[in-house]
Structures are given as structure tokens and as C-alpha cells.
Length: 206
Image 1 (cartoon, rainbow, N blue to C red):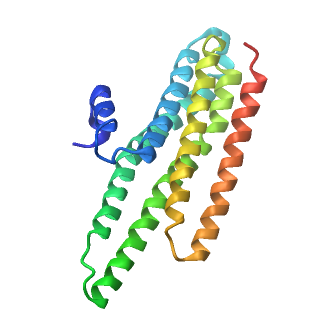
Image 2: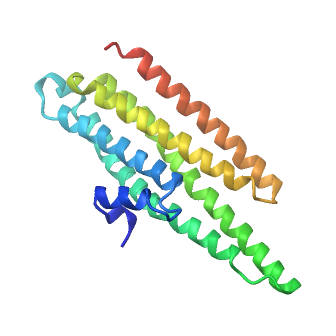
């Protein structure tokens, strides 16, 4: 059964168990799913209200994008766990002969790069929904503005958590050109997430 199909209690029980998955990468993706779900909720609380008729079409568009993002994040929960398992299996490959050592090393590098790419997608997606979340907070139902703020905070956590997982995998990669490229993107995403969250929370007066 996929992690995303577990009940909340089952997921938490698996998380606090002795297995390394779901780990931080999957939890970062879960934070992204929570973020997009909350933002979609606020659009739903806005659509159909006379007071917000002028932004109804905009809210409908954002709601649809949040639904798409949520499904992506749910898939990332399992993709992150699967990527870790592939790395784990690569480390278990035989290493008695030079040929085996070479094959094992190549498999580890390939699997590790994949293990970095999945959380990088989580971070990209999380940062990608932040502008919509800001619009929801500013133009959506103001009775739910704090829900939009929590959505933004969850998106930030998703981005930050995913970036940490990218970086720890990059530390094991030998291709320095790839490491430098992805490291720069991670820093850019980190700074953007931090800035966007701060801007919204500063602007909301509660």
C-alpha cells in the first residue's frame, strides 16, 4: 500500500516506527499537501460569496491549481520513500571484485542523484504555490485569512525540509558540476520561500 493511502494514524505510526521511511523528505511533501489543501479550502470559502464575487473566477483558478499541487505532493511522499529504498539497495550490492565495486559505485551515484531530484521537485512545487497562497490571503474570505497564513507556513516548511534533503544527498555526489548547479537552485528556492512567507505574515494584522 502506498504511504499516501494510509490513514492519518497509520501514517503517523509508520513515521515513528523503526523504518527510515517515511522520513524527512516524505514529511516535507506532506507539508506541501497540507499547504495546498488549506489554500484550496480558503478558495472554497470565498467562491459563491456576494462579497467576493469580483474574485470568484480567480479563486476558482487557484483552487484548481491547488488541487493539482496537492496530488503532486501526495505522489512525492511515495516517490521520496521509493528513492531512499533504491539508494539503500544500491549500498547492499556486492563489492568483492573491481567490477562489482564499479557497478555498485555507479548505482549509488545514480540512485543518490534521484534521491536529490525528488525533494528538489517538492521544493520547486512548494515555492511555486506561494504566490497563489498570498493572493488567497489577500483577496479571499478574510474570515479564513489565518488559514491562508498557515498554508503559507506549511509551504515554507515543505520547501525548507525538502531542500535539506536535497543538500544531504548532494554531499554524496561526485559530479561537482551537478552539485554546484543544484546547490545554487536550492539556495535560490530557500531565499524565495523565506521572503514570500515573511512578506505575507508581516502584512497580515491579527
